Length: 585
Ligand SMILES: Cc1cc2nc3c(=O)[nH]c(=O)nc-3n(C[C@H](O)[C@H](O)[C@H](O)COP(=O)(O)OP(=O)(O)OC[C@H]3O[C@@H](n4cnc5c(N)ncnc54)[C@H](O)[C@@H]3O)c2cc1C
Image (tube, rainbow, N blue to C red; front, side, top):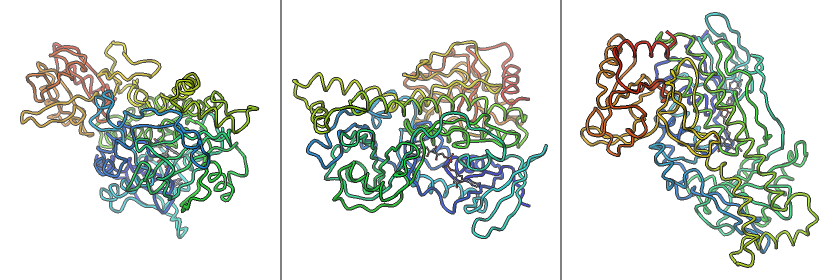
């Protein structure tokens, strides 16, 4: 029997992140993953700023950035009339800035020290696996799958099978993280996934080819291709690097939709023939790496935990890739859970803290599922509004009509304006900044301060707020040697942190007294002209929402947990009681 604190089931992005963060917190983990390798499918590639914060916490952020698409080659997405093989194919219907425009949108550069990145899961997961193995040399086991689990009052007993030999062994753990994409644990636990399933059959083809002569515009990452000659199909083409991006990328992924149940989607030869016909690349030499199938839907687990088992990532929520919220949400789940498990395991917090994982993450993930579904369904109405649905129009007239809409000739201004207006409806899919950051956790581990959030209820704009329940806003700070850092850097992932105003020394002293009693807590004063850290742009003073004698408490997952607008009579008693509430003590 193997004995560990936490058994992690699944070696995808969620499971590997859990292994890294928990090991960094000193938790004894074992990760088992059914497949012998990390994902062979390109799958996710968009890494939002909050996910990049987590990857930096994992110690792999710089490597991910170095391997990622350069910002200038992922600043836009664009919509095309066909791809090749027709005189009008390849014309750009519209172009849209996406995900902060490669670092040019000030809203994004002000939100985080890290930019949105793009690295296919195929290349991301090996980086994560190397880091997980470095931290836990004998405790990352690929080719080992969970086949059974039982829980009692003290822990979980799981049966693991070595896939290559069929040999079985038992693992006893205090807690279990189900990061298995919903493939095994949910059924064993009786967890139901609720929502919409099987809305369409999707097929992805990962291939190598030189498409540089057929496309232009290196700033475009995702190409959305409308097809007059196959109007029910929307094709998506994404460069996959790995060393060159933009139009000269060595590898590509083609995604296409079929009606659910269409047998053509399951016939490799038919899929490749359809791809060649739809893209007009019949004569182009290509090497196919893999054809994968997935169905479009949006489902959410009816609970995020069952006893001592916690569901993260696709085990808890699965959604369409539109908006890039799947893998990113998985990393955010794990960031929320890891410190809570560590604190409960070492006695810093009571087990009730673990209940806040589902209370906090489930509403956020539910919203992300809804957003991704909305994004996805929008494409159906877009095709109809472009006149590509059921219509009597001759195919050549459709090419000609949409080609006119691509022209800058003022005589076709009305047609162009219509197309641009229709495609503008997708802007939120490529601007999910507010969805990424504008959440408000409500649970025992957050103490409200009686204020009302300034967040846009429609999620169109992100307003950073140092308000309890919100993610800690980023502001550039300087230490006294003029080294620059971010407010985010003051949160080390292991401790609660008090960030006090320039005249809030009493809060820092209270934190130091609690730390002397053994609590993982630190405190700093931040002020424009004085403090442990200076606020050279006066940005923190603008964001913090408290006065010079006030303070906030930030949790290890960078969620603001409490705020006092000013000094109080007894800082030590106030801070003790706040910390006790957060930790469920
Ligand atoms: C085409 C496509 C594009 C996408 N694009 C994006 C994007 O741009 N951005 C984004 O954020 N998301 C995107 N997603 C979604 C993203 O890929 C998933 O949300 C992400 O893979 C979820 O990670 P996970 O670790 O939770 O699950 P998975 O990646 O499914 O990993 C599950 C792991 O569990 C293992 N496992 C399963 N059963 C067992 C068992 N019994 N015992 C042990 N191990 C087991 C598997 O081997 C696997 O390693 C996309 C998805 C698709 C299909």
